[in-house]
Image (tube, rainbow, N blue to C red):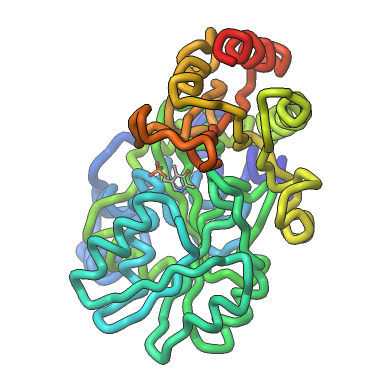
Length: 387
Ligand SMILES: *Cc1c(COP(=O)(O)O)cnc(C)c1O
């Protein structure tokens, strides 16, 4: 399906709302039903129509159709956050006694679900270095039921051979899920590579303006309906109509924002690579990236997040560098209009700083929509101030 068609037309029924270009926000909790038979049908299967907005809502459904099409998936659910999308998908696919194989260092809330929540219900997780396919094979047990991937990781950009892992899991009847937040469906489509459930946070690039949270889950109709009927409805973790409307609005400019951010990212990457105070950069499509060949094979492009190691001799120097920015803000998250910086050494004290440990000298930059010169000038003045 054509990208411009998906973004501008798919799922919209403008004839039903006065030809309005922007869809209405159907801000309602419940829907009137005229016949008891109709009510009976909805009670038996809430997936079949509109009963209560914890289940389905027309504004949210416009978004669902677009997001499913972007992933080339049959169906989609949109949650209140990426974390709630992950929670519902993991819970729907595991039961007591199961074993999960997860890529190591997944997003923090995922690690918490596996280590703190599921462990209480007799579900064990093995973390593997996902750079080698055989590590998934080695970790497999007879009760392995679920494989969790995040490719690329949002700090190290570590990637997994997506079609390789999907084929391995299919051979053993194991369900696969991936966090595709870094790439978005514009730069990577895991469903087409054989993955069962594709998740991405909508808080980042889909929203694009740092004004709403959201989480997306796509997959086959059967898998998505199963999650809708149980975890989605039971926990009430679906997105609200207004936030869904913001995400439809975000989608209108997704492609043009990604193009701009991609162009700027290459400029900033080049600047950082040549910088005397920068020891090394990490970016999945940089020729020096350790998994460059695999990234090139399965990703259409990369943008936004760049990690880099500075030649700092103390933690104070990194603190000064981050606090010295005039425009680039220090904040978590990414994918919005604004450039951001995040130091890795937040969790240590000054005295614990070890210059020999590259992790302590690592920072993550998110390149936003500002003019790239504006971003580089800010980095430069702060480098001069602190190094
Ligand atoms: C932000 C993020 C999430 C969680 O999404 P929320 O919408 O914040 O709950 C998951 N994975 C990655 C890679 C993220 O960056």
